[in-house]
Length: 94
Image 1 (cartoon, rainbow, N blue to C red):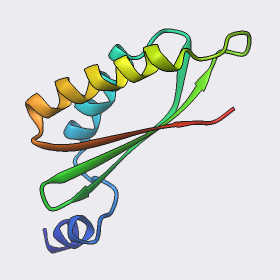
Image 2 (cartoon, rainbow, N blue to C red; image 1 turned 60 degrees about the vertical axis):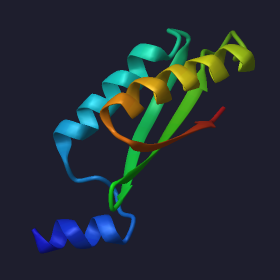
Image 3 (cartoon, helix red, strand yellow; image 1 turned 180 degrees about the horizontal axis):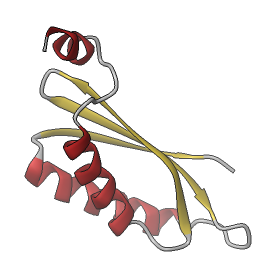
Image 4 (spheres, helix red, strand yellow; image 1 turned 180 degrees about the vertical axis):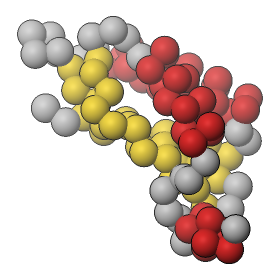
């Protein structure tokens, strides 16, 4: 218990697997099929969550940034209904 609390206080990676799965599910279901999620890492500091998603477009298409911004907002809206303090970073990796 103390170890998990220390990890959270120091801004470490989330240890709760159930929350990890819920967040990943929301991210994957709200992103377009042509966007590949390479990784989804959740950091927790106190009650605040920061989700960093490493994405890659398909090899033959470029990513529509306007559509991606809308998808990001959809993800944030859905996650904020479950978790009050949520930030989301989509990081493109070619």
